[in-house]
Amino acid sequence: MKKSALALILLFSSLLCVSQEKVYEEIVFEAFLIAALSDDYERALELIEKAMEIKPNDDFNYLIRGMAQKGLGNYNEALKDLNKSIRLGPEEPLSYYYRGLIREKQHDHEGALKDYTEAIALENIAPEYFYARAELLLDLERYNAAVYDYSSLISLEPDNYINYIYRGYAQMLMGDYEGAENDYNKAKSMVPELPNAYIRYLIDEIDYLDYEKTLDKYNRLLVLNPYDPYPYYFRAKIYNMMKDYSGTLEDLDKAISIQDDIPVLYFTRGQIKEELDKKEEAIKDYNKAIDLGPHEAEFYQARANLNFELKNYSDAINDYNTIIEIMPEYYYAYYARGIVKKAINDFEDAKEDFNKAIELAPGVIGLYAARAQVNRKLNNHRAALNDYNEAIAIAPDTPTLYHDRGRVNKSLNDYQAAFDDFKKAINLNPEYGIAYFRRGVIKEEHFDDYDGAIEDFESAIKYMPDYAMAYFRYGFLKQEAGKIQPALDAYNRAAELNLDKATLYFNRAIIKGIKEDFYGAFDDYNKALEIDPDLPEAIYASGLVSFFLGYEESACEDFKRASEMGIAEAKEFKKQLCE
Image (cartoon, rainbow, N blue to C red; front, side):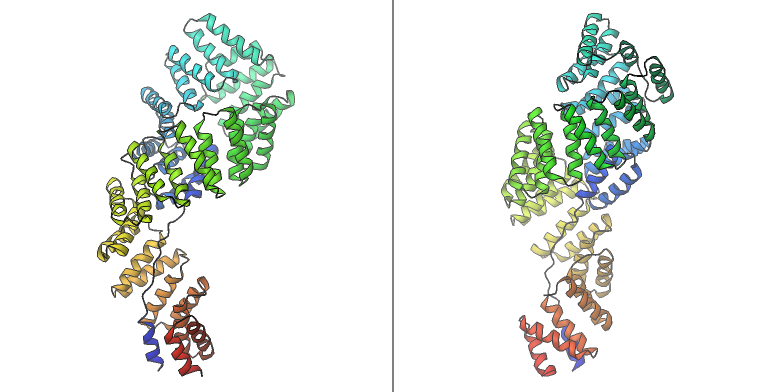
């Protein structure tokens, strides 16, 4: 009877396989923060490589890797990554900005100028893009154009006296001495204690790649006036570029000790402390900077970003509220506030923020994708579909948009449209592993194309070798086709990757039973029940194996539970073996 009872185990193999996406947003977010704000570029590369195993052709991943490679001085590799980022996502201004920085370092000044111009065309409210282009225009002696950029910066940051100084410098070089004097006077009116000696040094052209020369300039200035906080501030920035963080903090501390009411000193010290992972101290410095400069949106944005990282969501939202009060047309503030609201599951309010961001910047495809995500959370799949349609109309060669629209079409039970979208994503990016996986699921579940599904799961495994669900689905189809060893190999790999799925261990237990590895089957049934204690088929099968191995008391308990859960065979075995 034991042998015939065990044989019944092999008859049960009809299981539902639920697809599962590997979440990776937190990895990407951490990698971006490290690449943009710290110097641990090796760590950023390590993280983004993990993300690229999941989504190997997401333009933002190549941007981040390019940023990290730039930080490591691997300019050629950085350029390759940024080129690919732009091919995949031509609407991302940061990719052009960082490529411009690389080209400038490689003395491709015209290429850099084109990139900065493209970044500004895509996002004309980001000061760093104008700063980069203006400095390059000064180097190229195109003073009229540089004056235009510094004027744009003054429009964006009307309270930043530095912009007036540098516009004055550009005007002086082009012979407009009256304009230069007006700008210098404006800077002096904003910072009355600003010494003339400091202005003369500041407006001198400084080569930030020649650290020793620049340090010598500020050292000599401090000999002339050791009680001026600003040279300490700028020398601190040079130390920071040299990665001399103790020198950076010492100079900032010294500047604050001389004059403790200059907000940018606290703001900059907060940035350094954040880089050094002293996040709570950084928050205190940002608080002080905001107390002294309550109208500087940049201060609030730095604090908001850090609060979001620390999961202080309410504080982050308050900061974005203030940024919006200061700059009501700044689309990114609405977008960022929406991201925070999405993180706390406030999807309706997040959607309103994304609506406003899109109204202000209708050409930014990432905004439509963000709104689509919250529309899906709100089960408004039609609205999500419209969002992806809008984004695809703007950037029709972006594979991720077709992939994401395919997921929405699947939710709407339009399986042919979903199939077509996944196919389009693969055509645009033949290494798009997750698109193969999702197309394989459509083939398996809705088109009964099992051979085609197996091929797609094989491709998914090829391009995402650590994606556990691809091995599981592949193993299931191989098991259904009677290919026991390939199925077992696939299940073993999924288990190595820690797939937390009861049916994985249940299926593997069946195969182990076929191979007469009864103790292994027993362990796998128990593992399945650890994950899902109420899986009746696993309880029944565990009882059969327990009885076969001589654990009759345990077997009877399993038969009793399984019969109570509706397994008729369990009731019969309980009657025959346990009563």
